[in-house]
Image 1 (cartoon, helix red, strand yellow):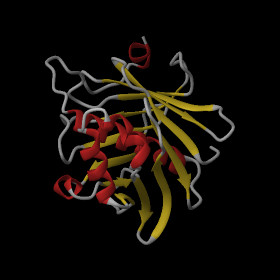
Image 2 (tube, one colour):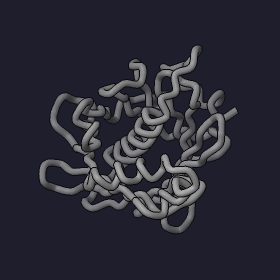
Image 3 (tube, one colour):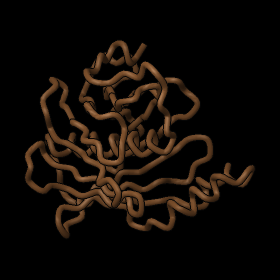
Image 4 (tube, rainbow, N blue to C red):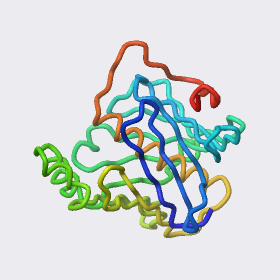
Length: 214
């Protein structure tokens, strides 16, 4: 993949859509997830029709402060895991990312927590809240130890949530897919957790790419 990647989260859809494009504007991936699900289940494909799956995100946990999410490749193979660090994430968002083993991997952390709190506060004010995305733009750093791997930046936007993913250290192959899926997991989990949606009949578990795209 060519970086930086542009990630756009659409609003106002029953099945939320996240589009990922490279610097040339070519689509790299499209992720879909339903807002009615009690458990996060995301299908990631290279096309809008959902005919070319490149991965998926699954969990057995109902959305909580410290759920563990499996990052799966196109054949359903495990390429990594992402876990939100519970109470610590209340003050500074933190997600632990590994390759599926128990060894320490990457840590995604919020660079300036106060920006998120100001963004949230402004977003609650009638009328002014519409412009929160133009004023405060949080950034998140992915590191392995002291080595920066990537940075996710929220861009100025109005109706949609736009992000840019910059690669700061070489990653390729399975690690590159893990990075993309981990960033999508982060965006879906944080967005869904903040929405606090918990409707009866929410699904989860195995992804049916065709069903998600219908």
